[in-house]
Image (cartoon, rainbow, N blue to C red; front, side):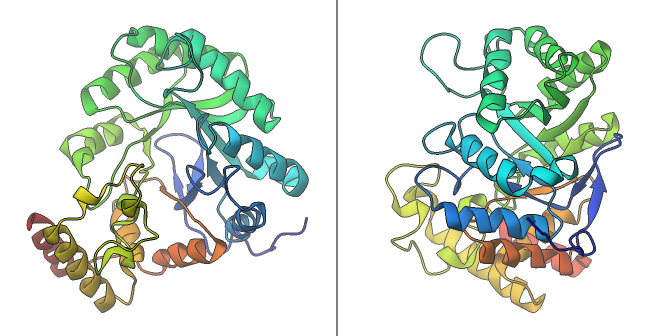
Length: 329
């Protein structure tokens, strides 16, 4: 498979915390659009387009699909047919922490679950190791020491090069980071939910990660599609919010929220960007953000997101205007 020889020329790369790892400013998340219910021709082209444009990081989890596990299987197939000669140019990550199989050992953060889950993920992707393995969410019932020693063990076994955490609030992240450092397997990266509409990380987590030399890679940067042109006029029938299941519910699309989206869209136009591009750029303006995870239902959508890199600078007038809009809720 031949990829563009200029693939690294236009991508921006950022150091991940205090590590030796550089990540692309935009990474591709496989949460949606890569399951057995999706079109292989479409997502294969998306993966090709990503790499052709310098995206070297592909982010998965054990339960991505649907059905759970299918995103890893499908990614693994394309990896071995199309990217076989480029494995060492890629950062491949996966996670465990949500329900994956029945019984007491298929969820949360026990050593039994994490080690077993990664073994399954490696088999699905037909890999000897992943570059980053995350604990996907804190476990209120398993001692944090057990979860962190499991991550340390996985690195020492050679099944992952680095480890990270996801969805950890600042106090628990501080403890996890300290434990991993003491064990000799530093926490490389934290993956929190962060967007213009979800800003809890600004309440101490970003400062903590900066102090401890840990990278940050936000997921859901477009708030499940709210920060796009899709909801400018309400709820379209083909949208996630229109469906009865899923993370984005109709109740979240209030009159006030639609007004905010419309105002932000006008500001984006003034910047020469779409709303989605401005929302991604708004996150990347902060140097504490290593990379931003985007999803893509097509190669065209991914290319549109990548255009955010053309302008990630904001003047104070723009930032103040955004704050005013976001406070109107």
